Image 1: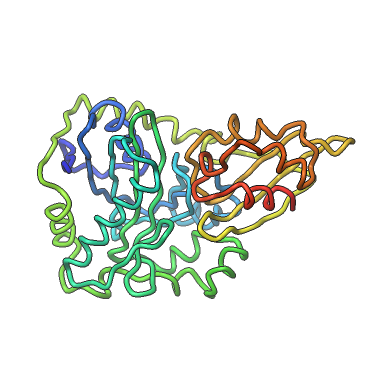
Image 2: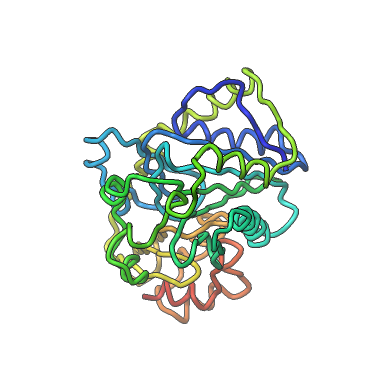
Length: 327
């Protein structure tokens, strides 16, 4: 795996690095696995399908100068600052998603174990030290490549994290904890080396070469970065639906389901939001299939015959999807 370096040490905003991942995947990577680490000023970053009002304390972030950014991958909401190392991995899409995702988390877990840490990866997207989370990860596809990115909590501002992120009660109840802080740990609690020494170890453990980007690469990335600041992308205002419910499916994620039906009980519109991971096109492959279908369990099950829910939503099967949509 090759480590990617920028031509300068400028501190950039978080969307730049998200655009950098995509730029590398589309224009540079080829068959070579690429990796880089980055840090940002305080920012809340939330998943592609999440509703910002449910996940982020917008007023608190604005009062305290905390940026808010929506990424293109699924998954949940995280808080990043200069003590939080972000990691990005770009690989050719020669294997199915769970294999690619698992390979990355195993590599990072192995790197942590080299430091004597009791690290393990979960079945979904977290890396733990003992029973507490130190890293959360997410992924998405572009043609021919997969992008995996995640946090590594070296240290963090627990107060800002707890205030800026407002996870729904259903999620916190399912975790069996009273606060965000009680679920996480930091590398600083377990290591005697500093942040820069840890980054050096991670780079040497995971990579065996270096790729230096140019000023022209940076200019192209900055152009790709622009759409991340569009309010329509960040806030994604949704129409309120007459019927709404929330569910959590273990190993898949949290869902908010919004359904509109006509006077005959046929589905007119269907929205799914939450921290789940998409591996396909939700609108064309799933919600489009169910429009015009009667909103009952049997009709939904029949409409999903011959369809594999796992090809659109990571980890989900048809029975789970039918139950979720049937309310």
